[in-house]
Image 1 (tube, protein in one colour):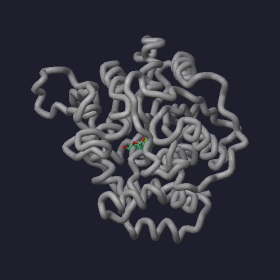
Image 2 (cartoon, rainbow, N blue to C red):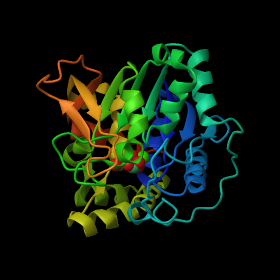
Image 3 (tube, helix red, strand yellow):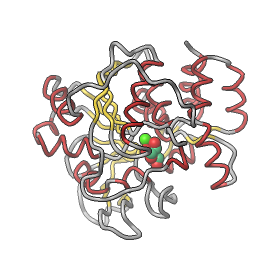
Image 4 (spheres, rainbow, N blue to C red):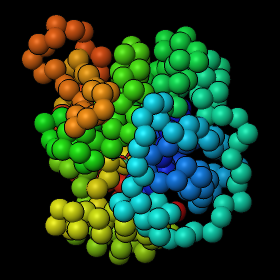
Length: 312
Ligand code: RIB
Ligand code: CA
């Protein structure tokens, strides 16, 4: 059984990834922690509560509110991508589930110390909560089993600036702390989304034909992202950055080519803020700190996603 802490800036693509984990027979979601990012923080918390409840785990999976802002930088939310509510303007009813009264940083530190070597973290957001948990109790770096993070981009344009992906751009200082922590890390960059995690028209039609509560939920929460992708790139489809990251955490065989690399992040202000550099030729003569995913099995990813959406 895979024990997960999922850190999220809950918008549509995060919620889809949460659903994959919450519905998996191979996963126990021990906690969901919320980080600043996609939309207003309180809305992200509400979206996480709603999604956990929608998945039928309202009484089992705690949701913890974390950092409302990055460590140092200012950032802008991206309602234009996800909708004002982050969920495709579904305006879902308020969840009956309440957020926990423990801060996410304390929850992460406590769970890792109580379960040394057992907890895997799936990082779907900027890494503020994670970085400050490491700062609060540095001993956890030796107790975290693995972190799979959706972040950065390698040999592929960024999505928030030409050089940076959104999660590492929002809080590059946090990313720098996590990349330097020594924790076992697997990076699933925006390049992997665009090459292997993009649903096309036929996929969307297949999901629509399922007619299940999960498929309707997915199409609703993805509708704003679909419209944004069409408007910004001309592509008809749905990008699944958080879902393909979650899928790889659940089934490692979906990542078909992963290479240990030395990875850096630019945490300066300016045009390269949040840019991730992967040292493919070991120019820096530094030990690898990240397992970088280079290729993934699209068919396997889609099967996991479709099986979840087609299920109850
Ligand atoms: O760049 C895509 C990532 O940024 C996704 O995790 C999305 O949810 C946002 O957090
Ligand atoms: Ca996210």
